[in-house]
Image (cartoon, rainbow, N blue to C red; front, side, top):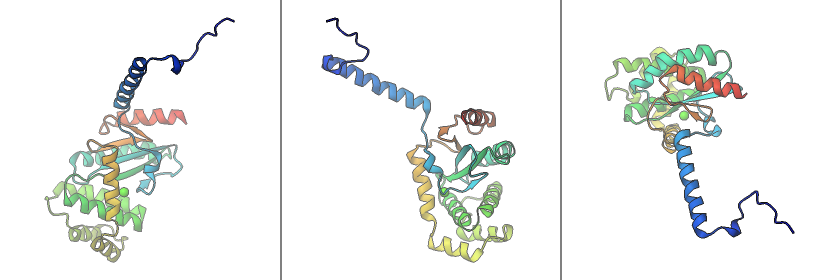
Length: 223
Ligand code: CA
C-alpha cells in the first residue's frame, strides 16, 4: 500500500527537540506580532464611558487622557474638532474619553468631576470636557480642588445640578469610575497620553490627525 503523503505535522513522529524549537519559534512569533500590533483594547471597554456621536456608528474611537496634560489639550484643541466635523457629526464615529491620570490630585479631581457630570447629563459632560481643557491654560498646580471645580462648573455650565455634583464629589460616589479607567489604561497598557484607539486598534501617533484618519478609514473600509 502506498504511503499517504503527509499534509500536516504528525506530532507522534516529532522529537522533543523539534517540539521545543516549534514552541520557542511560536513564542518569538507571538512576541514580534504583539510588538507590531501594539497593545489593544476590547470592544467591551467602550461600555459606560462618556461618548459623543451615533451609538450605532460603524467605528468607535477612544481617547485616554489627563486634563492636566498639555498634549491632551493639544489633541482636544487641534485634532478633536477635525474628528468631530469629519467623522462624529457625520455619524461615522462615536468618540469616547477615558481618564488616565498620572499627574496627581488635580487630574484625579478633574476626572472625578467629569464622571459625576456625565452621570447627570452626557451633553453637560462634553461642555465640561471643553471647559476644563480651556482652564488648563491658566491652571496653577494644586488649584483644581473639588471646591474650585464646583465653582467653575457653577459659573460656566448652569444646567449642572451643583448640589448633586458637590454631594457626589464629597462622598466620592464616582471615584471608582476614575479608578476603573486608570486600571484599564494600565492594563492595556497605555504608555503615554493622549492615546487614541480606533475600534480595538492603537493609533501610533494620536496627535497626528492624518494618522488617526488613516486608521479610521481602514476600519470604515471593513464595514
Ligand atoms: Ca470613565
